Image (tube, rainbow, N blue to C red; front, side):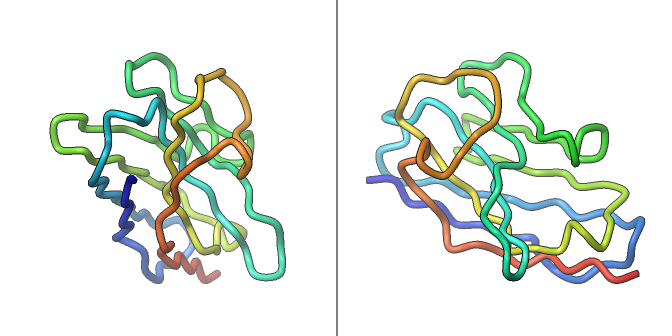
Length: 126
């Protein structure tokens, strides 16, 4: 079992920045890659970014490219999401997720992930 806990959410004005952190514990070595998802109010959960534990180019959904950066510290079992130039449409509950399945560079979907955190709220005001 893998446990994930997000932190770093909050309220910020448009154009501001936030960094989300995800602490992983448990059977970390069973996971292959990590991802961040978000769920705006009344909308579906969408994959924002993913990163393979072994390195390589992270994947970003188009709406956050150039503004968000996913990174990891494998020694500390941490994954981060640096969010810059935030927009009101970035307002959502953000989730950290882990998968034990093969990594394929490209969009990530809920059904590809095996473990989830509780989520952290990000609110961007105009």
